Length: 427
Image 1 (cartoon, helix red, strand yellow):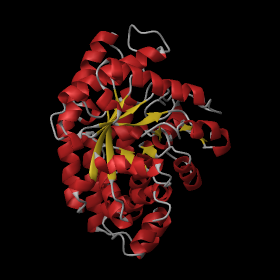
Image 2 (cartoon, one colour):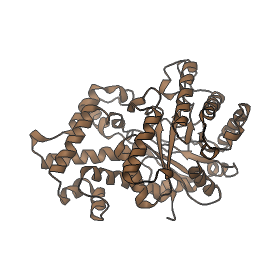
Image 3 (cartoon, one colour):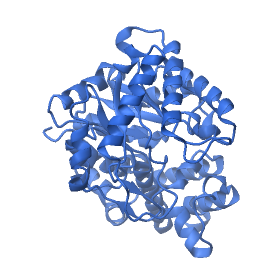
Image 4 (cartoon, helix red, strand yellow):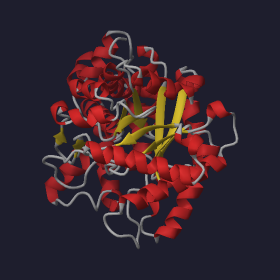
């Protein structure tokens, strides 16, 4: 895992560099990530799967870790991105997918999952046991979180059988934002205190040592804290560097560790650059790129409505909303509006629960039909400019063509520009 450790070591040496972690299982988002990296000459692409997306039970994608690796590598090859510059990560690896079970059972399953990720060649492992299981107190004591993380690290180390240079690197932390954005309304967040951040690191170091994981501790590259960055359904809490000065400085003397910033979706380019400068050198983005995907697909749906006869239209947006209402399990506990307000949330919420539904067979078929229609009747430049101005700019500069998949990829890629600028400010 020298690729990612090199970025961290360069940052610790004073170079304001970072790495973007793209957390998505959608093929167009992943292809957009590789294409963007080629265009901007990035030295590394980091793609992460979450424990809910990919696990030994299949997750909501239906993929186990080995499947996800094959899936991503096939897209990398298609895009022409070198596999030796790809790093795969596991995000929120812990009992998150099984919190309805008692902790003992959930942790047994989490151990299997972490071992499967490592055996499948995932090199960056985020150990996240911050969530309470069925018989746990709420909130979970910090020491319990750290003890469970150390236990999962032991399982990961036992599963690894490769060369020492390829041994996994780890991310720890106890103040971990909820995967996919907050479910409640947000006004202002309490930042992790410097003392709490360092105490968390010290606790993990000691517990790793107790389990004979001193070598693994040397490969812990980051800890997750709350820098005051989050989003909910329709608001973004922006990073305010002046509030995080003490927290930022706290990590400077800690060997080989930076901060990993979760929920950076929808931050401005200036905020992302400030995060990297302030040692939040790993920037995670998930809903932000799938939100852009949905924007592009809705735009193509609008173009179809202007260019294709009513009886021949795929009506992707209508099909998607019908399927979301028919299968509400992935959004029901997050969206509580009704009527038109619910329709707005289903489509436009920043938490982007639509992302769970793209693999649905009816929705996937509608998307393919939409793409086929627009390939048969390519949209005019003025229509692309009207509905997809970012893709239009890419089209006019020769970075995209009229194919609908290309337009989607260009639109998603534009979202990654701010991340590239933050992580490679002198590129």
